[in-house]
Length: 511
Image (cartoon, rainbow, N blue to C red; front, side, top):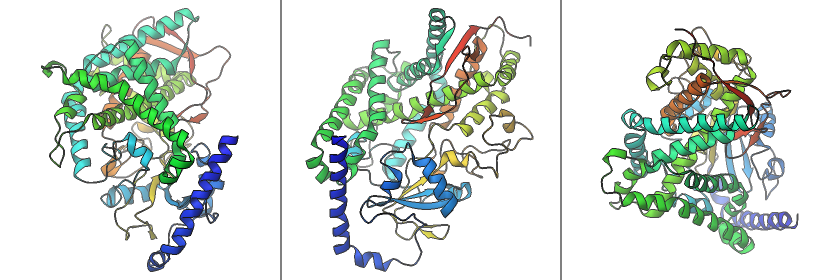
């Protein structure tokens, strides 16, 4: 409690100083810009803004935002201390900003100093401003790692990760009378697969565990360091211990990833097992230099952090709904059994011939998107506007993904899990998941900043779900209901991790 009081008083003091400076030096600039109003904003306190209503974490934001939407409409703003944040909850407004006026809203805000240490001064795809560096890094990732040709190249990595996953599930079930804790096994499998894509090696379990521990600590613990973003020159005085802890986190990142990067540098002939790091080692930046080791660590951390937790979270939600809805699981199994040869794996060439499988994945992403907010966007000019409101260039723009997937104007009974809505005749039949035509749901974002790994993520989800259902029959734990309550971590995960009973399938249904 004493630590919290000290942190809050420090934040209050810092905010007061900035507020007084703004009164002294910012008045004339504020008076000049009155052409358009800002989006409606709940009344806040002079120094801390709306922090007293929102708290310092995202855990309680959505229930509060639902009240703001009801009162102020689908676009509103709040103040986190001196910082202005705009929130957009309407799919049409999101399409207007991200697609129709995409170049204007494709920027990123200036990250706090502590965050810029993690992303090498915003030299990653997700943090870089909209410009030459961002284009180069994104184009390199897609062309060298996520293109269809490269995706086929990583087939053996998928097969390896799947084989170990099935083996571990069966072993755990054998030791626990058929019961398994699903999420732990799924995350380990995704770690193996993404590490293979990143470093070109089928890493031993101890190496996988080490990287996994560092990634989890960094992603989950980052929230602990949010206070460091409030005026770092002063927090370095008042919060010196937290700064030391944060620098230790960055050091652990480098210690976990750099040995694999250096080992990859030492490999002379790489054609037989190309990976993401290979492309980063040879990449030349717009200023003519090569990436340094710290920047490569940041890009690898981004690749792993963005791909592992989101995919594993989506997988657990999907399996939870299949356990909760055995009729849906039966329909999916029948489609798989009638499509895949009796002795074959549900490999990539079969996935496109299974529409119900894709519908299950799409419904899971609609109902349980791993992230309920996109990464913050920003505009580069002061004259930007949306829905008649001014959008200042020093504001963050946040799009509420979770809210859009539950819009009752689009989705009938949006809280129900019904994959059929994505089949012929359903309201989701013609959904464009990229959002280019129209946004009805956007678990991967939309517009210029749409997730570059969307295609690979969909492949991994369909591939793993198809084979998990083909190999094993899933049912609820004895006497337990599947609880779909949510919990905020880096992604929105199951509050109570999925426990299920599994048993091998007796055979494949006749074709």
